[in-house]
Amino acid sequence: MPLGSGATPAALAALVAESGWSAPRLHRLRDIEWASNLDLSLLERIVGVPARFAIVAGA
Image (tube, rainbow, N blue to C red; front, side, top):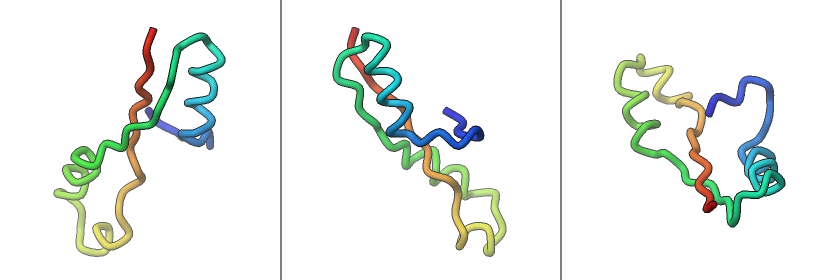
């Protein structure tokens, strides 16, 4: 989920909970982060990519 508006993953999980989904939790997508680094320059790799998360919840 892009977080360009400044919303934090925890705030988004809270919104999911408020909308009626049960037990929302954050799942970090480390494989996506790793793959995102493959085409970066050395300097960009040192700085890194933003953390990527998925929100997982039940119905």
